[in-house]
Length: 79
Image 1 (spheres, rainbow, N blue to C red):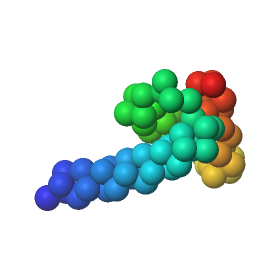
Image 2 (cartoon, rainbow, N blue to C red):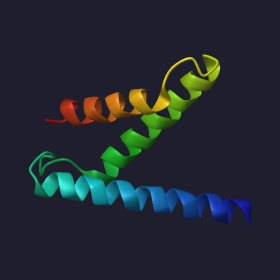
Image 3 (cartoon, helix red, strand yellow):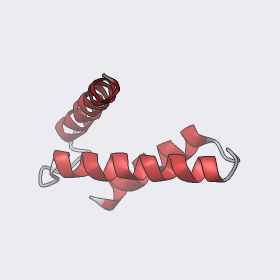
Image 4 (spheres, rainbow, N blue to C red):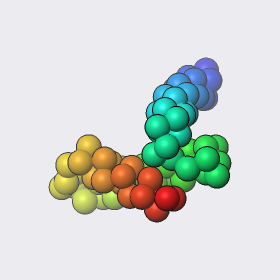
């Protein structure tokens, strides 16, 4: 039951990110050659690591700001 709920939340998050990436692709901010599934793995892996660093640091930085910076950096790195 717990694993089903976690899977449901993960799928919901992935659906949200796919819709954002699809919109970015339509506005040419995401190149056509980028594999969306691979980008999602990189994105969520990076988010998990960022959240872990935030926790280890005693919540010493603004997670939303760092998350926004991370997302922008990921997009910039694939152009």
